[in-house]
Length: 369
Image 1: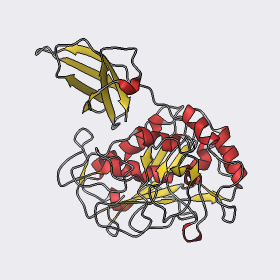
Image 2 (image 1 turned 120 degrees about the horizontal axis):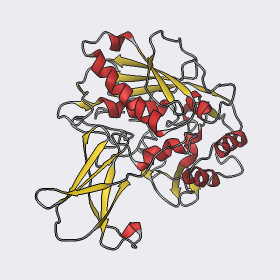
Image 3 (image 1 turned 90 degrees about the vertical axis):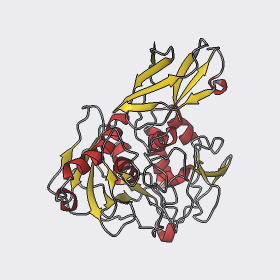
Image 4 (image 1 turned 60 degrees about the horizontal axis):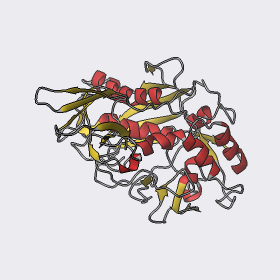
């Protein structure tokens, strides 16, 4: 992830790094994914190390809650003065055939998006079959432990790096602070790349990874060119555009998102003062790579406040990008429900929205953007 100044692409590592001694275990349910964060001395030696580690672990815990694969992912975190904002190194294993890749994805289906995404994959390798395929080690775990990578392997799966030259917002309930960068959002971005949200595209002879298979320029038109424009993420053979890819392999990660409003944690760029949110496209991107999504639609409660306005409340995973929809006719298709606005997160995982209209009887829904 970049913060405005453009930085060169850093190639994914396929080598095994040393295992570091200090491991931070994220608190999570026994049935959920566990992301172990090892903090390098560049972080543990900081005066505010506890707050920095808390923001990074908060990002890891979001994924632990959202995905239920019984796996352990091992990531080392560093502060680094040579990078722009965030960077990752993803360790990979090889070399499956295209048929094996699609069979791994097919066997890991748990949602409708999974089923649709697998159905969009051609029977014959659409890349032409001249380059190698690789699996990020973490994704090999999520796919059930394949290619010799066991689901609970203690070997490292990747590293994440954060610029030591900027000031970060570290308060989980106040992440959008002018002059500061949202460390939780940057960590979500980089951790997701270790989980498999990166790119191969045979760039500089690097081969392909499964995420490359969900690039489209039109309905049914896969695209594997790093110089292509107007490429988007789709899980139904290109019929629906969930998010536009950034698309510039020189100035950033080509399979990050183009800029969103509000800022998305998977965007290629984040500026100071922005809080990065997780969207439906973000959750789906990992879902279709083999991670078993455990997202539940919000259940709203409503009260009429002292001024007569309807105040809606619900709980969910922290940092998600919701909209509140309303209609006077509950039978209308959801696409016809007007959007009232976005709720605010008043405390971690607690969302609130106040409807300024006091004169109508309305039905409400909260949807993930």
